[in-house]
Image (cartoon, rainbow, N blue to C red; front, side, top):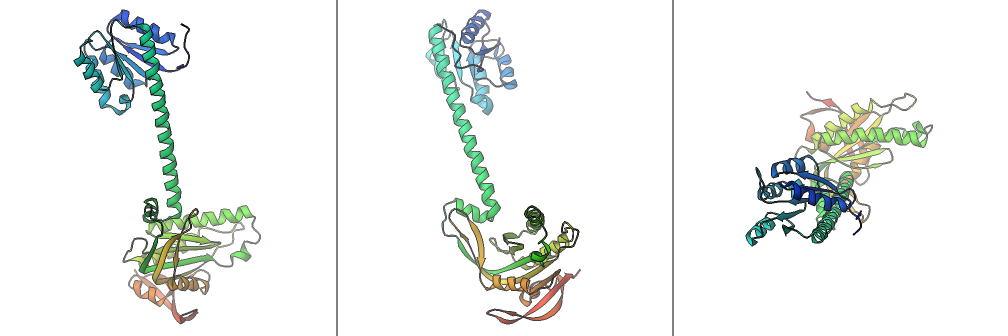
Length: 356
């Protein structure tokens, strides 16, 4: 019979306290093109298994110090060792011993003296099962990795509670919220100021700014909804309602204004933001089936956007509704009234800072 090489680079641990048996088993294993490592007792076998992985163990039962039964118990108790196939080769032929070994996790049981042809057939079968199990584990790890990557991508575009609802099979996700605070901010005179920038410089500038804004939103427990060109939208109070939604958004708007002072155009000129804030009810939901988007609708959104559009560079404009919610913590300056489509004249204030 020729030497097999199908299992090249596979390693087999031969465990037997009788030198002649160890030698005979080693020869049979090496003839199959496999790496052989030997142990003279159970204690040494366990030490070897903990130091490196093996694809198969040929195990005697009656040995000094640590018996084969004890080796199987230890292997079964350790997840990394439990997956290693074991063929017991023992002079004990009683059925009780066979049953005990199988219950302890052995894959096969052969009685000494053994038939070498049958031994090699059992070796090939056990190694093939190990190879298939390894493939299955690799596949499961790949599936888990892809699932984690998909979850991470989903969390980048949807709030975590909404992503969980979508993953659980919920299809039409639409919610109404009575009290939230919406903020829009965009770069004043951006079209004119960025006209001399290359596309790469333009994207790099916006990415740097909005990445910092994302960090501020996370710090204040707010949800970024989207970017529209050079505009950035966030909201407080959803998808999990919170009583301090207005305070959190106003504090974040001040942090964003402070943050933008650390950024400039490539020529060194300053960047200024117009910011608008309003509080009230909204409808929120997921739109799309292949490219998801979590968005808000309602007069509150439209009013916050108009507060931003009608604001001044470097200033934060809020409605009277929002001002009344946070006036104990922040200072304001009356601007007057501004026209809001569908609402007529609305009283607006400039946010000037923290009260304390």
